[in-house]
Length: 199
Image (cartoon, rainbow, N blue to C red; front, side, top):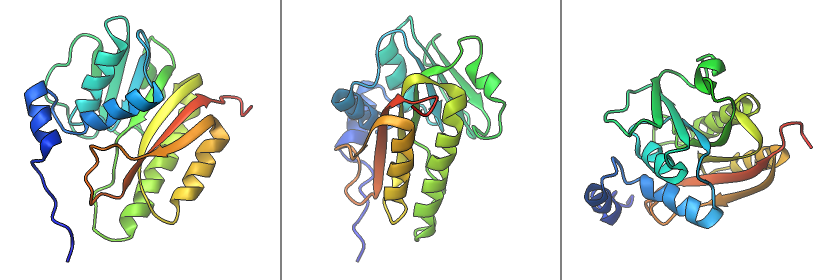
């Protein structure tokens, strides 16, 4: 019998108390705590940003001198302040110039994207495909030396994803935050030191 999914756990309740739109905020907060992902004044791109909790965290971390751009097929409800811009669209179809705006490439790219799940093995491969597309986009939108976080479902193609990411970044590590539900197969690939020229 499959483990029961607990919807209203401690992180759900904590998010409500602390003003985050979703419990996933605590995953990014823990990743930042462990890997020092953000610094004040940085530019951040959030791929698959709805419902907006990662936008909120990123905006807090980079502060008033930083900026955060998010894109998702679904609109983001709410206003997260003047440093946050959200775009409705497909991150892999929209002209990257629209994502870059006047600020140029980003210091950090974050992606909590996941495919619509079918509950079978195809979920894993479609998740890895999304991550591969994020890596394809990285040279266009990420600064040399930049950082990346992306969600992937564990499975047979996950080691290949880590290897490919390792060819593009100086350091890569898989990480499973405490806020991830126990029944979930999601992992977060955390990569730093983007090698824009392959060196």
